[in-house]
Image 1 (cartoon, rainbow, N blue to C red):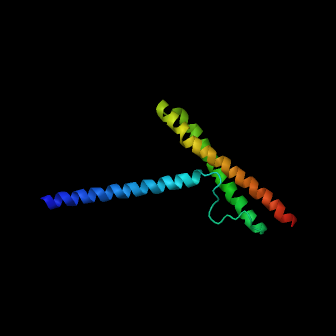
Image 2 (cartoon, rainbow, N blue to C red):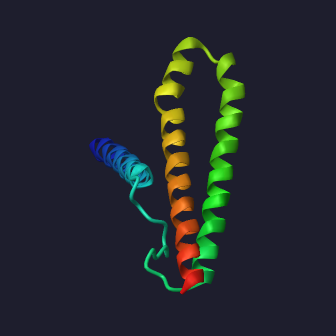
Image 3 (cartoon, rainbow, N blue to C red):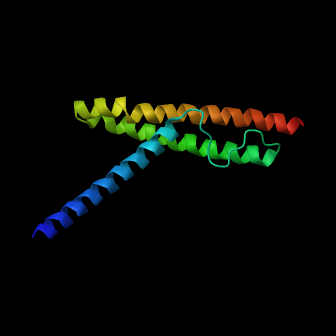
Length: 121
């Protein structure tokens, strides 16, 4: 019976470790996504290729449109939430989504300007 208790404890410890690792990965992804200066994988602001700028303009247009749609949907749902839920969403989710939308707009502006520079050269 003592062996089973140890096995259950080991299994429980393993489950806790997996949950802890998953939480750490999720927090890392969330932190990276919230970094206003973080570039997307493959994004090279120093590129000399017009087609690269065109690509990133499209990517940021898509991301910005997606984020704006999420915010619009949230605006429709939020009035129906309980007060505490509404406050929590406003302090966390909406703040993060709004911050990301501003970041995507800045990156879109950057690539639009970069495209104009590259077209001249």
